[in-house]
Length: 471
Ligand SMILES: Nc1ncnc2c1ncn2[C@@H]1O[C@H](COP(=O)(O)OP(=O)(O)OP(=O)(O)O)[C@@H](O)[C@H]1O
Image (tube, rainbow, N blue to C red; front, side, top):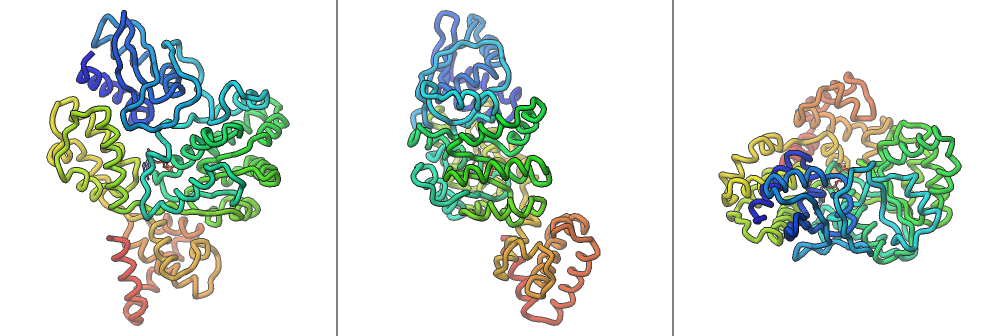
């Protein structure tokens, strides 16, 4: 099979598996050779090979045999792209496609040979999300907005004495929280293979807990979670408002902290701002180090794009891209990194399908919808952050119930900006300000309109904030 044919197979797979799966699993595959009716395909590590074989094997086989009718089987080997430094599990992989079984388990942990019975039970009980082989530190591009989060994650990944517990990473959608958590898990696997590291989303934590209740195995659930050395819970905001799951999480959390086991949590906002979360959990989560992943800036976006192109080019040296395309994308797509990556993936697939260089014209043609949607949209949260920063108050005070002027005035400024800079309705804005009524928002907006005319300082503040947000 030629490179072009493999490119066409991948483009077909992209249509079938969706962008996320494509990016995570299919894109890193490398076609190696065909041998006696077997197509040999390289995966970045044995674990990824197993996962792809189980979950996408039939689909890949279908597409490959449509191109080469002699192919009847697939075999996966470990083969990395030239500059791919993703970590490789201990065992080499050689596997054949077999019928797809239930969802693939698991987490980063000890090598299979060293697994304890408790660990085996954990695996069965946890059925957590797999680690993405591409979410490593090598592939995480560091810039001003994420340097602190990156440094903290690196420190935890060394597996040394626990210094901050928990490490709490927070930030908006698609800014790299999950990437950093997976990177910690991969790194710990290398640095401290003796540790049992469990990564799962808060949703999975809840699901497992509910299942344990249903099966009357809550004691197993409790004791299994307490055997973990490093617990990572992604998107913790999910359990806010879910009483019994919160309760169980709280106990697990305390038990592990008491044993000096490391906990890493991610959320879409700072613990203090999780208003639906029980107060005692919020305060527990505030005990360690809280670090914020800020929205990307132009330089970081450009760096990420460049790194993705380099990775792709290592696999497809023929890739042709005109100057200015990456700068254009970094400038125009400022929403989040996931969208940026999706745009590149589509460009790669499109240019390989039509055999054309990626130029600015092709980019505009191929990404018209993404570019339209990505036109700079300011969020209420962004406004709140900027305003809180400007007035040097905490987000929780800006959103919270206190009515003293130090907080009330910045709150009104933020409401005013939310009204003029976003398409949110007044009730929606009120909800984002700690569940306030829309009449409070109307009052706040009017008050700032009046003050702008009377008070030069307020007018200047509002104008400066507006410009900073629109930049
Ligand atoms: N600094 C970075 N360098 C390289 N890739 C990045 C960076 N930041 C984010 N990404 C990529 O962007 C995508 C989204 O990142 P990730 O899933 O970690 O976001 P998230 O913050 O967990 O988002 P969500 O809130 O939706 O869970 C991933 O493919 C990740 O690899």
